[in-house]
Image (cartoon, rainbow, N blue to C red):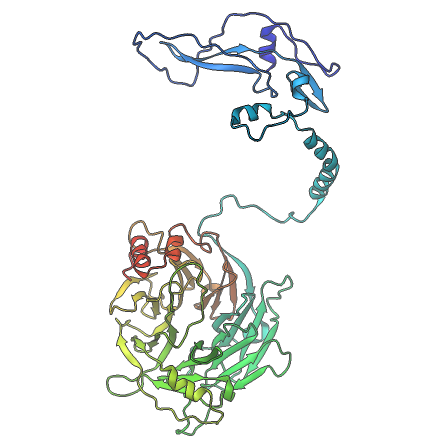
Length: 584
């Protein structure tokens, strides 16, 4: 700016003068050859042109002090400018260029019926006096608040990670309660409560045989509290034997169900400081009493929609091959329904896991409902088999309303369809919350299989590691991202997969983290369905890690959004095939 004024023979306004008049001087046009633009060659077509005339107007900013026009010649494209010199005056600490009478004049009345929008814009004032008055009024308070923010230490320990990877995972908490850890117990199950603030952890061991006389524990932490103590849980429940499975109630955040090594089903109310045991089934040596005789590998809550008021039953599965259903109406004194999975020779086949396909109609606005007995129940077995079963709600209704201590149950085989088996015990089976026919299984053979519930063979088979220690203990779909799932293994790793990020066609983990303490096996994991950035893992040394997922892993992707919004199953299936290769 000063360089141009020196050329024109003028001087910029000084601090002691409110306005300075610049002398008009006629000079020849200045041609500056461009140092960065490429030379543009043009060929004259001998057309007749006429010279354009420009009218210079007063402008407010220094940047617009000179009007410029672009022209081109045979040599290079250059810029020519013609100076427009105006008055300069000062308002407060700001220099304004132009005619003061025009700049500060009050706004002219505008005819709202005038259809000429250009004329309305030209009549608008450059500076609004009301805005200046407003800034004068709020300025001191704004500056005072900025000073307070500058002196605050609230963000002293906050470091911005400008290079945060899209699939990064970080540890938020490492929970290690003294009683279970001192007793050498392992984390056998993890569950989040219905509002996502509390994590429940079951403690036992998976490497013992025979009857268990050692105590087990159930501990809970509220991880959203600032005073979360890793060594001291908010609730610590002592149980007579190992707790092998755990599940919070879908609606009641303090109601927690567990299955024990000796075959008992327990329900606790963690909101009660004393006597928090709500109901408990009792083991019996009487063979005529229907109960579990082996460790309960999995418990889950299921809705029974045929009741006038939505009521939940508890499903438990065990190594004795039984699938039993329980209801709090009779305080778990006896099951209200039951089935038994049999092998080809008629003997019982140990059941290791159970889950229910979600009844999804489509659309992002549809509220996710808890699994219902109206849908299809799937189970995995110790022999590596995966079965589709059918539970009859009518039978459960009759038993669920009974007040007697015993309900007559015929343990029929519920299997209706068999899927491609694993080469080892099925450790976990989990149904997608976003598709009614999609589920996955993981096994000790080191593989994760993704199934279409209507097809025998697996759609995809994923092997995280070729190591002999690639034994997989748990796997689960993300509750927020339809294309994401995770698995944990004996080699101490947490694997996170994104089916939407597989450019080569071969499914590889987008994130691999060592989640076990000192390289010990990781036995269980659980996504948080409400606080969607959290994921919990538990290992064989009794420690639980709470992981914070990156924004990319906890937020719906651009390809998943149309899948979720699709209302027709045909449209949804085409999108799954397009983005993931899954035939559903």
